Image (cartoon, rainbow, N blue to C red; front, side, top):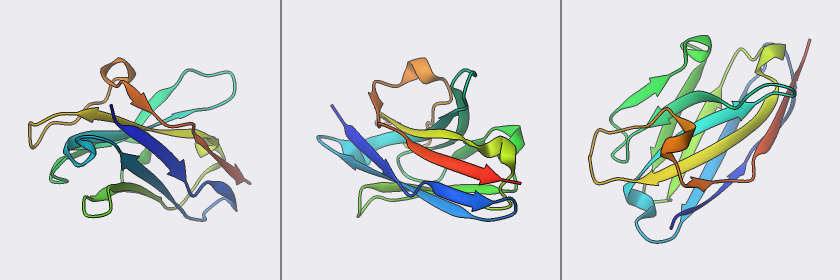
Length: 127
C-alpha cells in the first residue's frame, strides 16, 4: 500500500501560481502512477492531471491544459502539479492519488482506479 501526502495549497489571486506537491511512501511508491483530482464545494471530485510512473506519459483535463504541468521526481518519491494563470473556478480541495503499476507509460484518470489517496490540500483563487 502506498501512502500519499499533499502540500502546497494556499490562497492566491486570479492569474497567480501555485505548485502542489505529493509525497509518496511505502512499498513500490516509485512504481506508482499518480494523478491529481479536485473537488469544489457542492461538486463531484474531478480528474485534473495524471502521470505515469516513469514520468514520460501525462494527461490533463481540458480546462487546465496549457496552465498546469504535472511532473515527478522519483528520487524524492514526489509528484508535483504546477498551476499557472489560476482562475476562481480552480478553487477546490486538491487530492493526490497513487496506483502501483509496472507498466511504464500507463496513467489513470478515473477515481475508482486508485486505492491510495491523500487528505487533500485547499486551493483558493480570488478574483
